Length: 484
Image 1: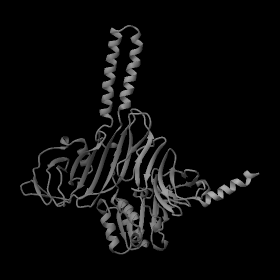
Image 2 (image 1 turned 180 degrees about the vertical axis):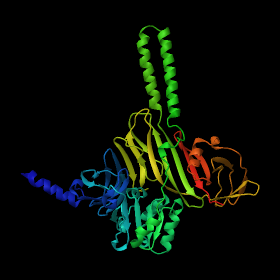
Image 3 (image 1 turned 135 degrees about the horizontal axis):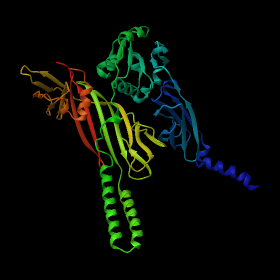
Image 4 (image 1 turned 90 degrees about the horizontal axis):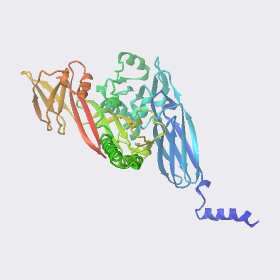
């Protein structure tokens, strides 16, 4: 009989001392998808996750789709709501699960709607709507616009008013500016002003995919006379690897295998018959030991493009990981935007870092001789400005109009590659035009030259740096120059 009243008495005493188990405390989870849950196949969206707890505790959040998921960890404070915006690959149904020590996991299910026609998102004051033939139109409040540029891939055209741009928070504006810099299709409605100028400055592709209209009522008229330009993006997986991941490591394995086979052959020829059994065992153990002692490698290839004088360049990149052990592996990712596996990886987990607000790690099952690529897409700051002019004697003058020195590179024009020397700020170099054809171009330079229109000229650089652990990163930058 004493035990019946002893348990509640102990619980009451524990509560007064703050010793009640965490499982008795409340724990709330809410989640909302971007774009009212609309997206398109193969796109990335964003999930707005809101968490509250009446006691301080660490919480792990997992947003999972079919075969891939994104995880984040955060320390909740008692009574302080937390909010995370997590980028995730779109799927028919996403599950959001929050778990903490001593607490039963809390889950929510979010079905997404896949549009069959292009998506037109309208963000205007007072919830004004606009429609366009051939598009599925949705109205978005300014506070619901995403905080990650990768989430803009869910829609095909964004219509936004200048007043809504002015109301965006810092992260929303950064995401929109990145989307503009990647030549995203945007219609800006409203009069000229400070924010209209900021939008025009952020637009990549020389503003070819930014359309201005005085009002939403004239949207169809302005789009019919200002069609969007196609964006010819580089497929990052087709980029040449900066250094073949694992090449040095597997060289060691090959050398160890050859030495082991030689040792086994010598044992078979010179030793007694019982060595014929022991030698293969010793060789196998030696090979396994060598492979186990090696560490995996990584390689990064990044391709960026900009117009001369632009402050931002759009980029695509791929990072290859080559593990040497069969195990669960945590691979750190480059500090770039829009990280997603280039192709589905079974049971992989992307880790979202709430501090840096980006995908920072890929967790996957490593296999020998298996290379795992991760793709990135975004914009980066660039401070390179070159002006090229023709001289009467047939040479070219290249002047660095930027504030920083430029490394040596090349000028591409009409299938030719001309040597561009390193230039200090405000320095000029005279470039001789040699009768060289496209056959003299490297494979990467040929790719860069193929992206230029006839008569267009561009500067091209290739720079490498070490990533550590035997890895290497190569950055190719193509800058289209102003015609003279």
